[in-house]
Image (cartoon, rainbow, N blue to C red; front, side):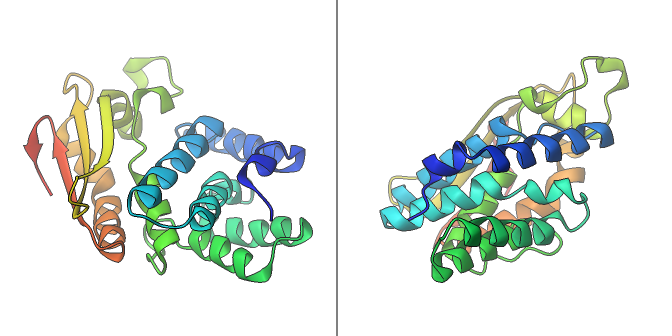
Length: 219
């Protein structure tokens, strides 16, 4: 079985992740490199482990998380689809069984808003983990006077957490936003579509998605 640990050490994959992130940096996007994919993998593990999914399902979700943004190497537009095709070639070459490849590729191809649908539990976990990664450290621009809306929103988030309740009926994204840098309205301006996709993903996992910002329940 191809493992998450092995993929993290694969020089070719790491090259693609670095190159894809460099392209996004030129385009003015926030960080999409190892910090991001590592956090997404960790959140996928948390979600599926907490809900009682098998070790294999958790492993496949982490693999999907590690590879989910490599399509940015091709182009930001439709990067989930191009990334799925790249992942197929990589995993097939490494000898991963077809069924496992199908699971990973499906999740990657459906992780982005606009085209993505939580067609499986692993796809749902990837969506929730990816779209909840909002944090100050993803902002590259050090000049606050030139922040665009994405910089302001990410920089304004001082704390974030994604938690499943004890009854395993809800998953809540809690954010603390410093409104000196970005407003709650700006957050919704760029993240509403993502939050609606998170709601669908949560439903796929039998959960209710909730969003709390600065102590107020908003979704």
